[in-house]
Image (cartoon, rainbow, N blue to C red; front, side, top):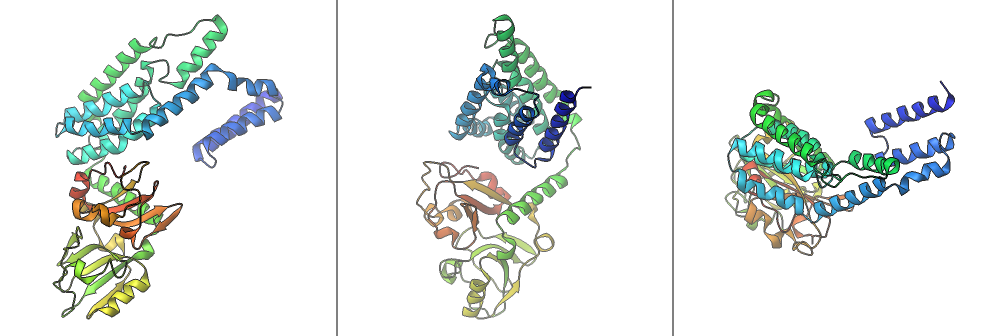
Amino acid sequence: MSFDMIYTFSVLAIAVLFFIFEWIRADVVAVLVLVSLTVGGVLTPDEAFAGFSSNAVIAIGALLVVSTGLVRSGVVKWIADHLKSIVRDSRRLLILTSTLIPGILSGFINIVAAVTIFIPAVRRMARQSNQDSAILLLPMAVTGLVGANLSLIGASHNLVVDSLLQEAASESFGFFEFSPIGAVLVVVAVIHALLFGPWLLKGKKDNGSEEEDQHTDDEDLINIYEMNNRLWEILVMSGSSVAGKPLKEIGMGTDYGLNPILVLRNGDQHPVENSDFRLAEKDVVAVGGREERVMAFAQSHDNISVLGQPDLKEEYSWSAFELVEVVVPPRSPAIDRTLREIHVRRDFGLTCIALWRKDQAYRTETRDRKLKEGDALLLFGSRERVCRFDPKPDFLW
């Protein structure tokens, strides 16, 4: 075995390791492979840069640009949202739409974009219909893969083969050259998902594991927004001046910048869905905010005790609640407005517990900050409220 072969296989093995463990971004790894092969003498500089003039490379790059445009403009999201009105509570319609539509789209836009956009929409539809999302996601991915053969631009390997054919025989494939084969594969994949998907994937993921995954997702969001050191429990003791009063009279948010999130009352959990929520004696209120503001609130009111920071795993059950992250898109009506002006809590029953802006999390006075393009909001509420929440046109999931 020659030195060039050993060197090339070594570079390939190292590249595969980087791709698997994602120590470096994939595009950077690809460039480093090219540089390594050139420095090692396997490729000449002319050969190294020859690929950038390939029709396949240009076409793939253009396809990614078009796909990104369709995603960011909301076209794919609009399609996903409108599927909800078609599906309703039908299990077969849910499987059909979650496989057929992504399969068709992947033939004309990047498959990763087509499937990724549909994942949250499909999971929401499954939750609303009380269906197991496991029977939807894997068939959707498979249909997306085979649907890439519906057109010449559906898969990058189609473009590469077309480019090689042009170089070797001065011929090329037609745009719909692969469509008959792709259509047959999509139909077979959809029928297979309808007939055998629920049976083959039955029991792969039960309701308990789904709740566990949701709990894990919530923990990740709490860690990202650094909420662990900004969550406090306040006990309303007997004879407290705040007992029986609505939150809007107490001034917990307006005067102290605190976010009341959840109330533990007689063993039950009650989300704070609006400022008319009335506290009662022996209520334990979970609030978000700085320690000094929590202490100031407790000192300003009679018979209020700060219990400290809660153990989210031990003291709270997240099965009935959900955390949601939304983003302020370009040209959103919410730009330069506050959440108080948009009435997110009043109209949707969701509480904003944190705001992310320019790599920094803000966890106090979130309702009074003017929103900017690109802001991310962490909302909390009951699953019923979250399922009914339609963020358009102000926010995007």
